[in-house]
Image (cartoon, rainbow, N blue to C red):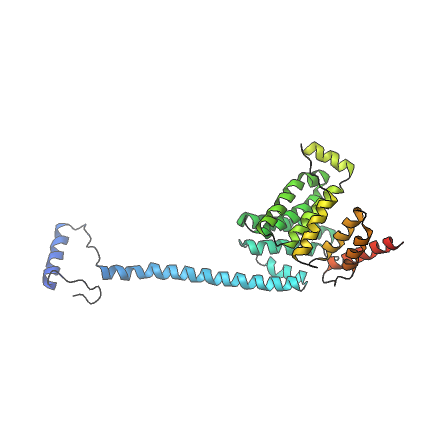
Length: 293
């Protein structure tokens, strides 16, 4: 009995050696199949190699998770420049979760007051490319759809009125898809509400351009915008200063002064954590002054 493979020999060692030699002499090209115990030894190398690959992949996943946690912490602290510096080191990543965060960081950096006009434009286009790549890597990522819509909208601002209108349907589709994938994402609801508000406010000459581009131009109402803003606030109360100020502005458009003052006051009193919050505070203060005249 072989102690390694447990197979009972059918020949003595001498018989086995003689028969092997005879076979090799009669057919020099034949190869004796390895015994089972030898096969097990041969399998150790590929299995070890596979284990090594799995271990490396697991380590890489842990590294990405730690990076995302660090990124989310910096975002929550309003550390826009540090966040961009951290994530831009991984701009060649294929991870959708990392890429959409990098798109957001590029876009947020572009909004800072000390950024030059030239740098702002570069960051805006860069943000769109990161969002586009995130979507290509994972079409089921709600945040990739959301930031693709945001970044496309901001790129369109540089491309002119015709492009802005031409991309409006695409922007709305991606926002609706983001909400479909995550019905609890208040930010997507806010952005879609803003889209509705902007479409309702579209000047007459832009409406004429829209009619030339589309057989059915994009349309909306202030009521539709209000519904999205209120839904966003219901899902995540006080989550975003701009949602508060847009609620106030929408109620103004609907001639409801009392509710407009209520939401504008909340926007004014929102604790500023970012440059955007400071701008919202300033806008809310100015609108409230006008209402008090």
